[in-house]
Length: 307
Ligand code: FDA
Image: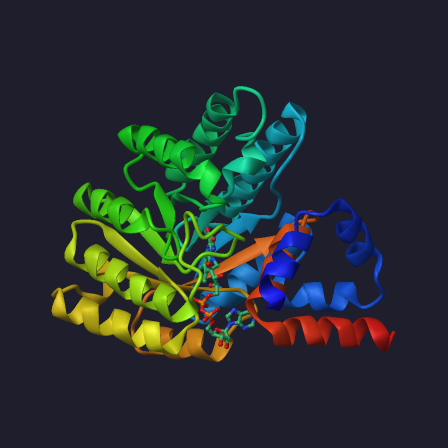
């Protein structure tokens, strides 16, 4: 019940101001957000790397309102890639981007987002890594998939995300699996209407399994984005049945969530990538993490009340 209310609040400016100013917010945010600047996140990438984990870095931000902000987003990623190059961390860290932060919802947003993301993808390729396009709400996805296809003409390693809760996703998975793409499958984190998305959690899990099977049996590179132990073990079994070697798929989890499980999978020889978000515009990302687990909200409210 609480999840949809928190997701609605994630789009409210009034709530954004309230949450940002609340005492105790900083401490709870720090569990999910790895810092504010590139310099904050570099030691975390190094530490995760020493633990045998790989990383996908997200400069937090979305739903921008000006073209200048879209250029700033592009430049923030270029700065990050430059720093990874200096430190020789290029091969362990890929990037995740939200096209709404690159201007997708502004006027001529599709073209703007493509023009902004292309140099980021090119810079990533130069240091031996790649970019994955995150999936946002369903109204943005046709544009995201078209940009993904366009980028893959020059940079075939570019990945994208699909969401198990959407009715459209099995078809998207078949298309992407057939054309050899890197694809991250997740359950889906946005508030979506019943006309486009499954609302029942067990049914979303069943769809997730069907989609994992399509990806594992296909030509591409599946990235299993979940903390759900049941889905992770089904993923391992589907990979085995499809005859995939350990480096022919990977698991992904979010920074700050189930770290022990991340270590365990890496120790078993799996490729385990940690989605590590940093930056100052953390509100939307943070609220989605609260919505995923009611206990997080309780912890957050308690930390406000005890300050
Ligand atoms: P589920 O929500 O059932 O959680 C399983 C267990 O994991 C919980 O019981 C709990 O123990 C733990 N857990 C999960 N979330 C937690 C949290 N926030 N805090 C504490 N514990 C938690 N979504 C999207 O729409 N577009 C995207 O591009 C992405 N990208 C993405 C990348 C990666 C690497 C991951 C792991 C996830 C995403 N997501 C996403 C988010 C995704 O859609 C989904 O909301 C979360 O992963 C939660 O779903 P689980 O599969 O983890 O299962």
